[in-house]
Length: 323
Ligand code: ATP
Ligand code: FE2
Image (tube, rainbow, N blue to C red):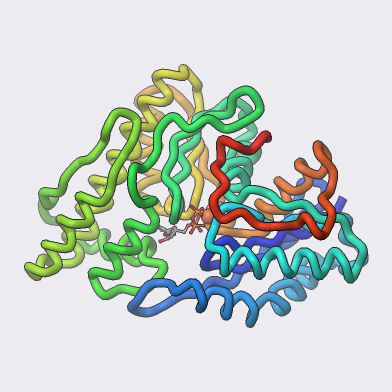
């Protein structure tokens, strides 16, 4: 079965094509900035501008025609309404024009499932570290259960804010990673905010704001922010592994591209004698292939939805989804 997956929850418009679980193409266009952050109206403008080329390029790279596609999957939740509406609109249009069934999936479940399925392990603890989300989860009773999460902003959005304070553009996480590698001095004193199984970033953000006002060296800030917040994430992940007695940690979401976070997770897992897995970068950031992969499963289990019901939900929580 050939599935065309559409991703448009936030900054990225992407189309991935998957044939019986095998990824044939995964084309992405992301709105970036050189200094400021993201404005919702600009996101829909961007997605409207690029969607046609992304669909065509993805079909071309996969070597398939629209008439070969058996299912359209799109991310219906959660995300920014302005962006979600473009993906849902493209999915509905393709479905109506070519008479192809359509399903909507949850973006967070897609981030989690692509890692879990590619890891080859069924029963794992997942650290989902992305822009809007930071959660430690495991699958139980046909749904993901959240053991711990951020009490304020997602780690990616936090890193993007730090980058913005340092005058860097969006996405800021990769820019901070490069900057952090240029520093070899002592760790700056930042708050360490783990509360039970939860984490918090707002206090660190305030401290960083003060440091930037005081003219502290940007690379020292980038290095220290990474060391402190990644240590917090590794601590709660380790506690989840200890509580659940599971033997594998899967790291997912865009921030999982960070080599230092991967290294710290791997060190902790080695020390505990459990395995560690993270997918390739193209499956960590927002991408259409993960939507197509999950869409195939949702369709097999529940069938398609009527085009008139192919809606969006900006606020759906991961644990409310059966999977
Ligand atoms: P969510 O999945 O929670 O809805 P999102 O879709 O915006 O959020 P992703 O596309 O999964 O998030 O990830 C984007 C985030 O990942 C951005 O905040 C970006 O700065 C961050 N990121 C990407 N690469 C890196 C990196 N190398 N180091 C740190 N952060 C990174
Ligand atoms: Fe995402």
